[in-house]
Length: 173
Image (cartoon, rainbow, N blue to C red; front, side):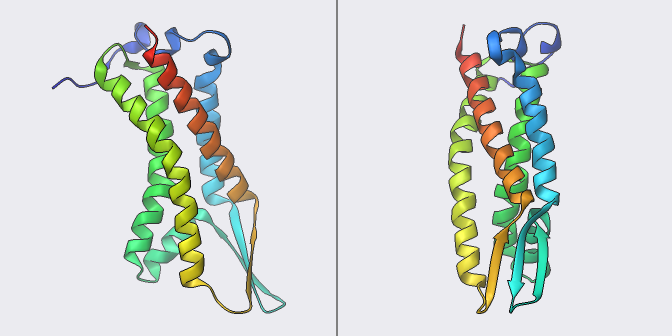
């Protein structure tokens, strides 16, 4: 079994193959990571009850509120798809961009898998959010999207595009 080799800082990393706008992929991934962190901790949703009561929640608070309320399954699913997978995808992309030798099959397979899973994870998060809203919905309650959700969405879209571009670069000989 072959594992991903490191040492690409001196030659085999994806950044050495980049031309044109692809040379910016490392910076794009850093921006996506910053947006992800901001999107997770800035207010993402404002829930209004009745006319004058409202509370704001970040995505991270929302995920951990499931754990606090004893909904371990919802916590686990939302934690994986909202926090763990996006972070893993971006950090892995950065490692492959800067340090991993992608001349071997394992790194290319990882990138191809990340690019494919990335497309489906956005759909999964949307479906989970719909299920949670239906299950946990309350009468006389309204919800408004806040800046955190918008920034998180931007991070997901940007990182999905960047990982796809990394996959294309890795497949070039």
